[in-house]
Image (cartoon, rainbow, N blue to C red; front, side):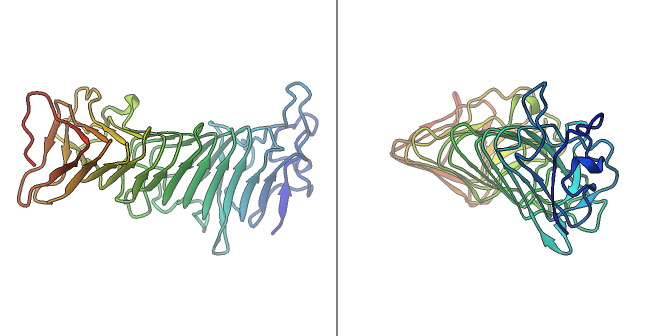
Length: 332
């Protein structure tokens, strides 16, 4: 077990992670190591940036104690075609992936090793990070935090929670992102822009920024399942939640309960395309949604409906702005 620092720059193998001379310990990484990417790396004179670390020729899967990339390293870690394939857990202890500053990182958790998880991901600064989980349901990235930069979560990525901060932050989450056990991810947003194409748990809180639930890239293709948000809490002036999400034909995109407060805005008026309905509440669930003073819930969508049953879901408006669907009657 050791910290091993990427250097790169070995003649004719400048970017090869499988070249021992490209690492400060004069060997390639092994299980139990923590990978370090910092200013010690050799600068590529042609680009002025640190040499990238290419994992194409590094066979097998590493069980690491952590990955640290600081702002002194300006190169890339892995690539879209050949990400770093690893587990950030060793001997039963989960580690962290900390990424700071510019550059790109492509990292995939996989089942090819005994350990399959990560404790936490911290992304700070202006870089771009791609996270993947392979097909197994226990390749868990844990709690993911980002402030600045861009995070891409591939389809079916496993994580426990997502915390988003900073006005320049961007997050793009694919379809099927979820916790271990196939439950929805907890999301807390205080700034930035998030595009999310997966279910939402009852621990969703948005106190700033813009959240797009559903994007133009995923207007269909979810299959015979409903797409649901258990609870959406939107608060503060300038905070907007766009309900673009649509399920496939015959299915429902549903928010079971929402609360809009302190000047926040829920906007469900976006085009639906050729897909299923949007629905508030669940049949017989009796959920009570709320729109408070200076806040807006724009439900003016031709696909919008309230679930029925007894007790029926309802919406209470405490001096806020509630916009109902044109030519439709909503009982609450």
